[in-house]
Amino acid sequence: MEHALGGIAIVALALHLGAAAFFSAALAPAAFGALAPEGALRALGLVVRPYYLFLFGTAGAAALALFRLSPVDGGLMALSAGASLWLLGVLLPRLRGAYAALAAGEAAGGREAKRLRRLAEAANLFQLLLALALLLRFVP
Picture 1 (cartoon, rainbow, N blue to C red):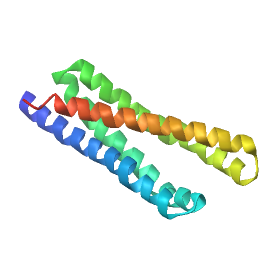
Picture 2 (tube, rainbow, N blue to C red):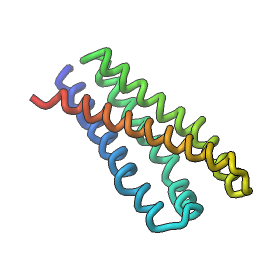
Picture 3 (cartoon, helix red, strand yellow):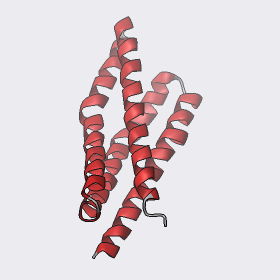
Picture 4 (tube, rainbow, N blue to C red):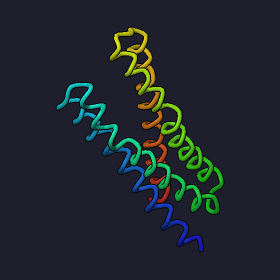
């Protein structure tokens, strides 16, 4: 049973890590580098919801598999899954509102958008590094 759970955890962690790394290192920089900020936000808006749902699913699968092997590791991945839902349901709507305020000419919207974007980047980095650290625990 532990062998199967370890396999599930490895696959879920690898998928989680790969998605977080691709989004952070390739997709978001390419969108902001190739498009005007408004266009980049629209383009990323198409993939952000599926991205966070994917992170939630992979973190949740890893958490369930890891709970039996290591309750602490399972709890950390459950925290990561919760962070994905929080980013999707709380932070992203606020970020959209801040960008709308910025587009309307409100200077406070720009400051808030920058703050929220940094918070999202920090949360993504946490998720990426956590998945990497837990995945490395399976390396002999």
